[in-house]
Image 1: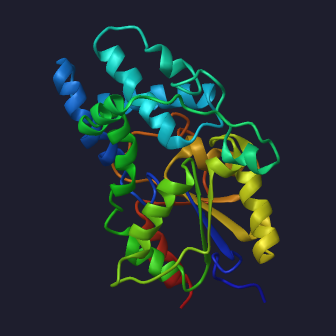
Image 2 (image 1 turned 45 degrees about the horizontal axis):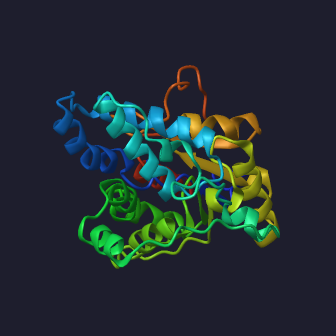
Amino acid sequence: MASSNPFSKYKALVFDCYGTLVDWETGIYDALKPLFQKSGKPTDRRTIIDAFSSVERDLQGRFPTMRYTDLLAKVYKTLEARLQNKETPPDVLRDDASTGKPVLSSAHVASGTSQVATAPVGTSADADAQNSAPDPAEAFAQSVAAWQPFPDTPPALAALSKRFKLVILSNIDRETIAKTRALLEGDSAHPFKFDAVYTAEEVGAYKPAPEMLSYALARLKEEFGIEQGEVLMTAQSVFHDVLPAKRRGMDTAWINREGAVTGLPESSGVEPTYVFPTLGDLAQAVESASR
């Protein structure tokens, strides 16, 4: 007799991290609002987040193998120039702001490519000046690691970890996701551990590129023996996660968080397998179906 629990066929949940688990948009808004205020431009949430998303997507297409932290610094510099009606700085249009040489992602280095770019050697005076005046673009890029999870995220993940493998698939670099992972797993009131984390830095591509999901599914099969039909893609972004998964024939859970701005350009007409307003609602639905 077939199970009446629709979630019983899944062995793993694959999450987008920023926007689904972490309050990505509030982090962007809070970090970039001073830049918009300084320029005298509108500072409403949608304007700032839409401006960020437009530049981010363009630069991801231009630099698909760049570490996300480095790309975020370029996003900041591009926005700053546009808000001041200036030309985009030349260093933003190069892979390596110091040398102009291509920077290889760790995915390419690991595959046997040995070329690396070296930064020029500066004077001690240069170093002192840099140390005394932190670059705002770098500060913005580094701030991601401190952005906070949604309130429902820790208890939901703790509950879901009792029934599924929990996996992150993120357009991020290893260093930043390690800090975010520690933040998410550090809630002593809701203990859990992720079973795997896969990043754009490893793959050398950014979602919605199909290479990202292909990589995650291959790793899940290799490491845990889990097939595609046993995976539920769980994410807020329709553009980055839900649509690519649906196109592969996967089941999807759209976490349609109230007020979300990013990742929704194609949400009209999308029919995910499940829709929940929060991750907490998904966890509750799983628990109820399991009784």
